[in-house]
Length: 281
Image 1 (spheres, one colour):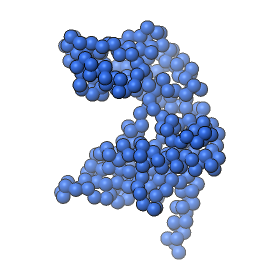
Image 2 (cartoon, one colour):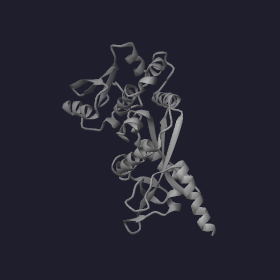
Image 3 (cartoon, helix red, strand yellow):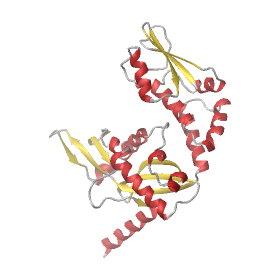
Image 4 (cartoon, helix red, strand yellow):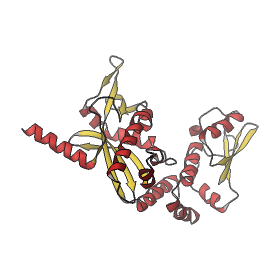
């Protein structure tokens, strides 16, 4: 699609995008660049420590280059090209038309357009919920302690921002939730977020499709989401500190207790209703 000439001192490499992230690291290391790709800006100044010059032999690639500015990094470039590359076939042609006619000015507009196009082909949203747990670092005693519902709820904005960053535009979680043949075929996108309900913050997972899931497919999605929460997306997320007013917080979308669950919105509403009934008795 496009190429980046990356130079440091007398060494340079021509890196073709798209490519796997490990290959990008390898090619940078080959010319003596050890700093992370997220620290390399898209600049071609003569006195810059690392210089990057973009070019493409295709008209489309040159229009993609327009989406990148000097404040962006090699990581941003990798994500932009990857997001275009993995766009569903049903929307790829329209997305490419946006790019070729310069209807998008930067990477943020690209990601928004891709999200809206996915939503247009998958208007049905099936929402799942799970409990959240968290630990917070106690600066006074230098140890971790469990965060209660109030502390977790008060950090809603910070948690939401963190889980958004965890999900890269160049990879849709729908690709790795389930291998159930029909559920996997229907699933177009899956997005993790959080939602406050009755004063408690829950994990929320929105699965988009063009048609409704069957009960069997719902169960397959629940199993897949639980697996991602414990060993996939959630495992990585719970290891990343989130800065809050209360201190550094580590949030989990999964725990090993018997009271853990993945519920549909209808099941969640029923459970909350039953809970209110029990409290009123």
